[in-house]
Length: 417
Image (cartoon, rainbow, N blue to C red; front, side, top):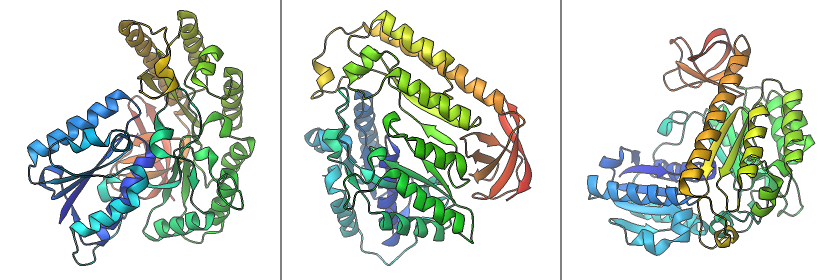
């Protein structure tokens, strides 16, 4: 059987899709382009209306271009609106997030071939291994539908995480991205209770004690209130952790943050970002920002733009507010006109481009460990610079690179690691 997996949204979805591919490959199935696949798994996102629309359009396009394909749809949109998904052409099954273990069994029933291969670096274009250690969220953010689609927080046992890391290392992966729906809540639901910092310490100890290839751990998105001093200390002190943080800000007006039900102030966030920059001058610090939240005034937006412009952030993901029925924010008034929201988004994206350009320029001349991607002519550093390097290397090799140019972003190899 030939299969294809189409993934929308967050790194948690990427990790879930990786598990699906592992099961398919182990059953003897082989990866194929969407238009040639017998089975297509679509793993959806529902964080915005645009994400919903993208999933619907993709499913219709798959059915049109490959009318013989069986389409299995899962993820957050499939969980939130299963009837809408089931009505789309060629959809054979709709599987909610909580039933994803059933999805793996269902896929096995579609194909009972001989044992096959396994996920290795390069399958589906992946060099890093995305490992979900937590799912679910209990935070009451007023704009977010994800707690309703992912359920209560649930963490993988630390020993299971270490086992999965060992398996990924044995398969040849040298970078693991740790992810979760609310990653910073890791371990609070376990008995005995533990924490993300404790898990990171164990992973760091494993990496430091390894006699084999170096393993790098990259921490996925962390809510600002969960990025503790202990976590910053661990990243700053150990080569096992990438100096890369993603800390969703959402807004820089305390009034808007309160309406969003975000449990921190702009003063707290700014102090955290400044501390990271002081401790790790080369660290990348990304963020998410929402513009046009109900009730956002010109003064609120000006506060957001002013903070971002002077901040140590290095890249931004900008989202115009998207109404999600069933959330508290959907009942709020004071909506800005669409043209105003689009202009605000444009301005913040421009600030984001300037921040990225400034960061890239500051990196010229710096040297970093990097992992080669694709055909070996691209290398990604721990601080998330994707550098074009001279050809002649394979994918998934550690190299030491010096940043030679910010525009275009490129580097030279100074040492093989």
